[in-house]
Length: 142
Image (cartoon, rainbow, N blue to C red; front, side, top):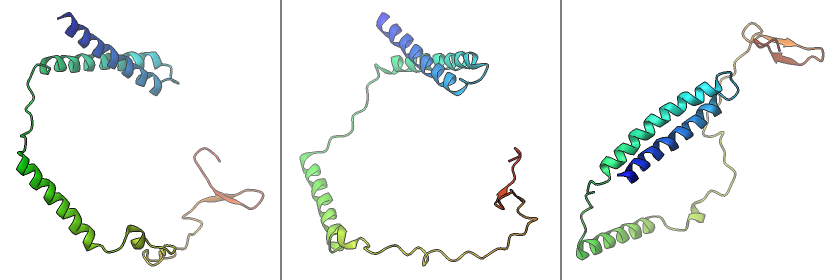
């Protein structure tokens, strides 16, 4: 009984520490970093205790094993799989290196040319500095 109680407590403590670390990492630069770590830790503690209890409750339940195949059924499954792989290999003559393209890809044939659009000064606000270069204006005054 003590062993299962310790397992549940350590499960809660482990998840609480992990979630507190996540909260501290997310809000580390803010003023409320420790409050966020405590909140995340409390949520982690509750979730860890719930998971630990579920593990304790379901630990004694028997798990249904898959149905075992007989030797004849297993041998038939292996033969079927090998035959399918052999047929797949025969359908594609040559090796993988033979089927690989050797020349450079020509992407222009696959992608249609985009229509050219004319950008007017009213549509794209830009400012010019002293050297004549233009750059986009931003909300931060750049």
